[in-house]
Amino acid sequence: MSANRTSRPDPASAAGTATSAATAGTPSGLAEFLRTRRSRLRPEDVDLPDFGGRRRVAGLRREELAQLAGVSVDYYTRLEQGRVGNPSDAVLDAVARALRLDPEEAGHLHRLARTRPTRAGGSGGTGGTGRGQARGSAVPQKVRPSMARLLDAMPDVPAVVMGRRMDILAWNSAAAALLGDYATLAPAERNIARITFLDPASRTLFDDWVGCARENVAFLHLEAGRRPDDPRLAELIGELSVRSQEFRQWWAEHPVRDKTSGHKVFRHPLVGRMELVYDTLRSADDPDQALVTYTADPGSPSEDALRMLISWEADRVARPPR
Image (cartoon, rainbow, N blue to C red; front, side):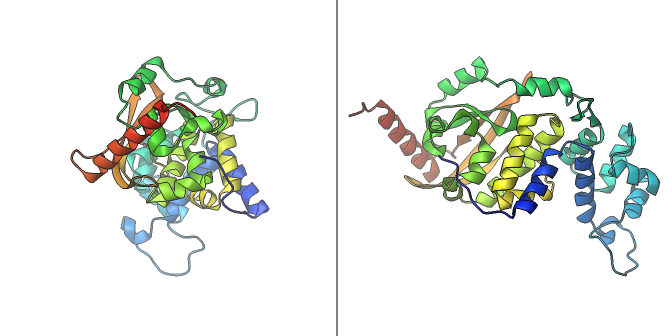
């Protein structure tokens, strides 16, 4: 697959979004996150009276959210602006409950609220999100030998090893048959989110391309909260913001979701429609690498199509060049 420009963005708008993307794990990222979550709630959603009148912004006002969380308006305002030095877990939990956050969003809130500026002018934090992690993130990531052995042991299951920032660290021949041969891409271009947004082929391969793309945005937001000092992650988000109008729009919504498991429908050019289940498996001692597998229900037409596709790929690889 090759990356191509998908839209011609307005330069000023794209630059502004790229800048905000690069600060996703900073106090301004906390403000954006809290504002988007306030905007999606109405007074009646949280059993507050709505006295009518025109609201300057969508959703709950700061004073309403503060009332629900049991804190002063001044304190909540300073929290939203990133000016509270060390908010307690109890306060953050109360804000999360008031905003009706799910567990992943609540964890994201805790990470953003604990982000601290570093002496170098970037952002640091606690819980493994500071400068030490930034230095580690700059080192090229290599696939774990155990993960590589798993890939070799499952030739009939499309599987890739996903690293930090959704980088593709390794894949097997079955994955090449299903998703495309990543060997044709430069190492810097082997990234799931980058391919999804910038490679036109992905828009036809995935039946629900919008759903897949939105999942990628949500996971990158989660990564940005975990790694606020990662320059390569900021560079990736900035590039996608500049080159993809859809990415800019969805990034501004500040979705947060981990990559776990689910269903995807493929429209493969060789075998047609396949409904597959994907699972994301992480090692407890190295969650920065995940094995992502794709399987079909036993006895289904999708299983037959996948088996045929993998067989064709095996024949192609085994066939000597002319």
